[in-house]
Length: 78
Image (tube, rainbow, N blue to C red; front, side, top):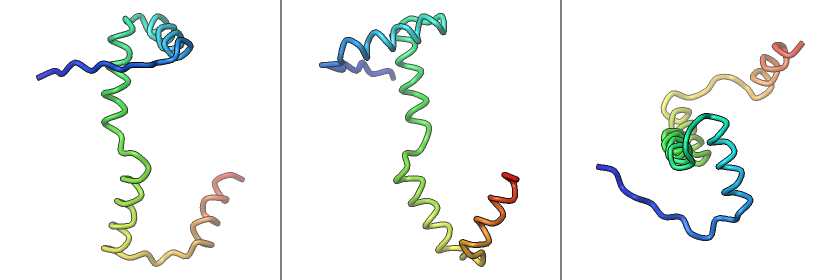
């Protein structure tokens, strides 16, 4: 079941930017903001993601040193 949400005190410039983005995507402001909220809710926020990483690391352990990880990362950048 869908729920209506009212957001008060949105600055004019924020509303205008969202309306502009909606128009560029060929959608109404309501459709655009709805799609953005759905996408935002699908992604874990940084704290949730970090907690998942810490939990997984604790469960399976990690045998790689920080230096090794950074070395592999930097090798891809050369």
